[in-house]
Amino acid sequence: MIIKDNMANMCAKVTSTYMEFTLAFGPKPEFSFSFKFIQFLPIKSCIQHYKKRKYVRYFIAKFLISWYHICMKENLIHYRTCVCNINYHMVWSVKYRRKILNAEVEAYLQELVQEIAEDKGFTVHLFECEEGDHVHCFVSAPPKLSITAIVKYLKGISGRKLFERFPEIRNQLWKGELWNHSYYVETVGSVSEENIRRYIEHQSKAY
Image (cartoon, rainbow, N blue to C red; front, side, top):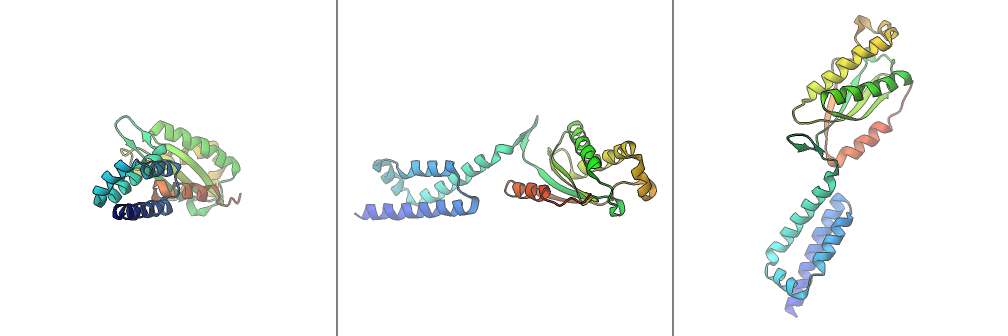
């Protein structure tokens, strides 16, 4: 009877741990299946776990954390010498905030940044021109590429190519410089990636 009560308490603690992770990370079918598998172990196995009750909650918590990270890393990128998930959200503006980024310019830029990314070894997931005077860019890159180099490639090459394609834009910009020298950047983890995507996709456009 005592063992049964203690086993019930232990299961309650494990359930509490599971609920804490569910609230923190959201429900995962893999979690539910794994937990039920543990919960319905034979009585003999449960007694063996009971004898090591000090460590049960710790190992189950570690198991849940590890399984969560495995499930969340579907977007890992495999390079020649490493596996990583390094993402950046970048924003930069047109010089003097001139509203020159119309629909035609944006379409050309979206194709151009993909070509630049493929040539330089990184990935552009999203590229949007907002309010006609600044851009949002969501990028994944290997560790060998610094954020400074990525921004230099995107701003430098796109600025030169855009003037070649749309020479009339140069007349609206003093000294013929397209982009502002400064930029904003933030790193994006697995948890905030979807939020960043939604933010960029839902920004208003004013051509």
